[in-house]
Structure formats: C-alpha cells, structure tokens
Length: 379
Image 1 (cartoon, rainbow, N blue to C red):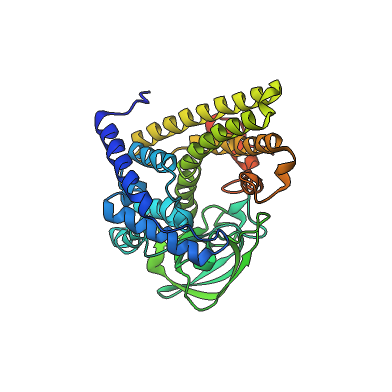
Image 2: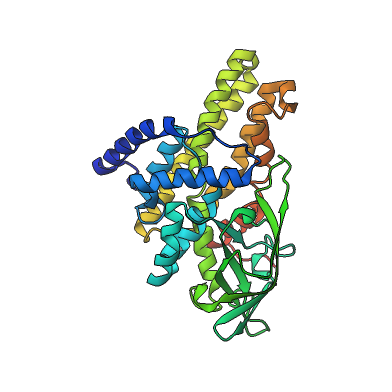
C-alpha cells in the first residue's frame, strides 16, 4: 500500500502552511478553558476563518488523505483545535454527509462548516455506555414526529450546542432485536422538554453533561437513515470517531514527547537510563500510530471515505499510549506533577478518560477479535 503523498497533496500542504503562518498571529487571545460559552465563540470564530479561506470542508468533502494533511499541519502550527465543533465536524457532519439525503446535507452541513451551529452527542446512557445497543431512550411515532423520552449521559458540549446527534429506540419487543430497533435523529436543543445538567470532570472542566428528555417532539424528517437502521448509521459515526477524529491528537502527542525530552534534559531526569528508554519507546509507539493512521486513511480512500474497523485498532492502542505518555510526563516532572498549574498535568488527568471515551478498551478488543481476527463471540 502506497503511503506517500502526491505532488498535488504536497502542494495543498504548502498552501495551507503559508495560510496558517499568516492567519494565526491575527487570532484573539484564547479564552479561559473553563468558559465554555467563550470557548464556543472562539472555536466557531476559527471555523469561520477556515470557511472563508476555503479549508472548512476538509472533514467530509475532501479526500481522507487531504484531511490527514490538514490535521497534521494545523496541529504542528499550533492552530486552535476543533473544540466545541468536535461533534459537528468529526462525528455528525461526516455521518450526515455519508448517510443523509441531499436536503439533509444542505440543511445541516453548511452551518457547521461556517461555525454557525454546534452539535453535541447523545449516545451513552447511565445503563448503556459500553453496551450501547441496550439503550432505553424511547422514540414513539406520532404522525410526522417522534415523541422521545429518556436520559443520556456524557453528552459532549450539550450546554452550548444547537443540535444533538441522538440515538433512540424506535422498536421494542423480541422481534425487533437490540440492534435493529434503533434510529439516529438530529434533535434541536431548544426543543421543549430537554433538561441539561453539566458534569464536572476530574480536571475541573464541564464539557460533558447529563441530558433528560421528557416527551420531546422531533420531526421524522430529522431522522438520518431508515427507521430502525440507526445501529448501522451509528457504526458510520463511530468509524469516524475512532478512525480519524484523533489524528490531530497523535501529532500533538509527538510534539509533547519532544518537549518532554527537552524538559528531562533540563531538570536532570534524562540522566536516568530508564527515563531515556521510556521516552524512546514512546517515540516508537507514536511513530507506529502515525503509520497506522496513514494505513487507515489509505483504506478509507479505497472504500468511499468511511474508515474501517482498523479504527478500533488505532483507538485501542492510542488510548493507552496517551496515558503512558502523561505518566512519563509525571515521572519527568517529579514533585511538580502535583501542581495542576504546570504544563501536562491537566492533560494527564484528562487522559484517564481515553480508555473509556469513544468506546472502552474492552469493547475495542472485542471488535478487533471478532471483526478483524474472526474469533468467535464470547458466551
């Protein structure tokens, strides 16, 4: 498989690099990390700049390789991350682009690209996180609407979102099956009956929330895909989440590793052979992850732009490598690792969630075992 870039792709890289060099110095100061309304405004302002420069469509209208180049270069340049636009740009948007009708794509994609609308993700439930197919939020058909009742948890960016990608159960009973009875809906967050309660993380931020739905009416026209076919549509969403959404973070981790090596040389930790071996192993780990990313992107190129199950291999290994990286950072910092004001310590706390978020490591191992290795399901 050819992992090299074409001349046209390298020309795109050079053009993007020049634009970033001119655009980044003109950005306003970054807001307080705990100020989510402020962060929404900042993130959407950056997205508007990308839109006006012609770079906003890389997440679904460009080839996977061009998307990879975009994420690599923006991270290397220190450009703002997608932030509050994460779900819209990397989950809901690509899913609607792949599965939506022309009318749905026209309605929902341009506002995300312009930074006008923010999405949140309403998948997990208190009793249906890792076992997503057992969710119990019900959607009952009433004419041209679904009437939805239930609750969601870990709803990303719910308190600042305009829309929610919502997974609901539209059929029940032994004939429906756990997977066939689900539907994927686009829910307006200003609809009556929605209650959002922010959840504060270990790091002190509140980018997640629990969400309660009390007879919320959602138009049937807001369903992506066929009724009861939401599990298949959700697998498209999760393939983007696990296959390409973390690409920029791999580049960021490689940058952090270089900074960590410089810190170790400065404070004397580099004199410890075990520290040098640890950082060297991590350098190899993230280099391999980058190659795996390129392989997954090449596979997506050959299959219409949707990442395959190889994304689960990446998600599984990346989650643990990120935790290993920040554990190594704590070892290099020594007593300073207890100071949350020091660089890397907040990221170390957030890294603890990576083996749970976007599919637990246990679930990823099951996917790899069953869908890639062909092993039998556990009994």
